[in-house]
Amino acid sequence: MTPAPIRVNEIFGPTIQGEGALIGQPTVFVRTGGCDYRCTWCDTLHAVDSAYRDEWHPMTPQAIMMQVDLLSGGKALTVSLSGGNPAIQPLGDLIDLGRRKGYRFALETQGSLAKDWFETLDILTLSPKPPSSGMETDWQKLAECVAAAGPDTKTVMKVVIFDDADYAYAREVAARYPELQLYLQPGNHTPPQPGEEDGGIDMAGIMDRMRWLVDKVTTDRLYTATVLPQLHTLIWGNLRGV
Image (cartoon, rainbow, N blue to C red; front, side, top):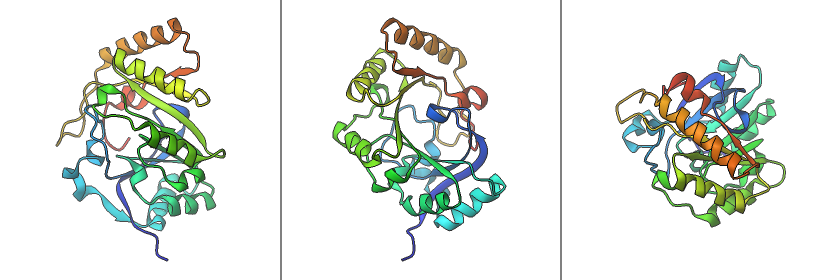
C-alpha cells in the first residue's frame, strides 16, 4: 500500500537542536505543516497558520529521506520532527524508513494527539502549553501520549515559561509525571507576525526570565527540572530554516 503523503513546510540542516533533551546536538529538521493549537506566542506561524498552507507540500517518506540524505551527506544523524504539531501527520512510515538507514528520530508535540508510532521514536518531547499560550491542556490526552510511547522511547516533558502562572503549571506537570525529565525554558516575547520572516528577539526579557526561573527552581528545590534557554533563539532569533 502506498504510504500517505506528509505535509512538509520545510526541511533544513544540519544545524543544532536548540532546546530540550538534545540541545546542542546536530540534527536535520523536518518541519510539518498544520496544527490543532493556536498559541498566542507561537514562533512558527508559517507551520501553523492556514494562511501559509500553500507552502506545505505533500511528500512521500522516500522523498523526505532523499532530502535528509542529501543534507546530511549520507551520514546518519538525528532527525527532528517538528511543526506545527507533527503528530497530525502520518509519520510512521518515514520513521521506519529512516531507522533502517541508521537515523535516529526525535519528535516534539504538545501532547494533544496520541499515535501508535510514538513507540518507534528514539525521543518524544511532550510540550504541553501553559496558561500564557491561551490553550488548555487535556490531561487525559497527554496521558495517552505518554502511554503510546511505551518503555522503549525516551519521553520527556518541556514547558515554556513566561510568568508565575506558567511556573505553577510546570510544577503541576512535574507532580503528575515525576518519573519523566522536565525541561523548563524562558520564552521569547516577540514571535514573528504574519508576513514576517523574523520576529526579532527580546534578549533582555529572556535573560531576566532566565535568572528569575533559575531562582524559582532553586528556591523551591525543584531539583528534577533542567532549566535551559532556547539556544537557537539566542543565536538566530526566530529566523526560519536554522
